[in-house]
View: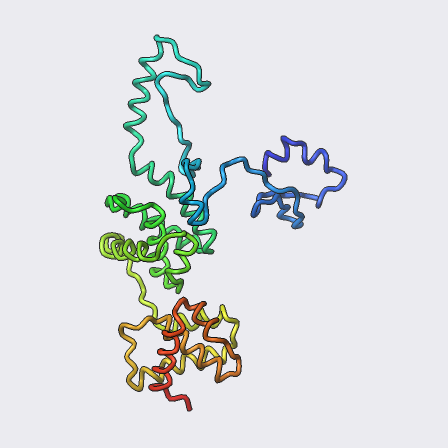
Length: 304
């Protein structure tokens, strides 16, 4: 139970109207909530500096943000002042200078990198809704990237996004790179370049292999997000299978575009009409690409 409630006399003041017999208070999404009965109490007030989320805020940011380390406290030993900030006497000044020098030599660039990267990874995991197993593999991939010194000239967030995308591919979870770049506020081109670098340099060392998604995998994802029926999903999968059997070559074509086209045709057949704009926006392909893939599927697939 958080000490904040005990220090502020929360339970003393609310003994009369307690939420339940055995309250279990926890911080959830910015509020103090009882985990036993679900009662919501006051908002969690935080005096830490506001993070920059949008691209505009990131560019306007002038000072570095406070770094919270989940792997240990950021102890800094200074040679001229003690913990209270008062000047040291000459007797102890040389000793603290020596300690400060040793401390600086023990804090490696690898540790400094992880102090910044780990909170960012936790933030991206929460916003993307990624399972813990995927996040653990993303951290393994990222730490190996740092050890191989591939961070030179590349930002931490770019490599983190690429590591997350690799981990999703390893686990066979069909998430698009556009979803990750939108949350991380990073250009897609940079993430793709870092992803290819990790693919060649890091994954072979970890004995991990990425899965290449076929249009069938994206059909399930798009069908669920568009809230279409299982009949529509089956028609879309059958269309893709029939087109391949009749000579449709999907090499070099984006599987998301083929899946979106199959979903569009399936929704028309099942009278669950979805517009081209809706489907292309969800699949993150242009409407022109969607129409071209629809023509390809209609040409090769047996729609009877």
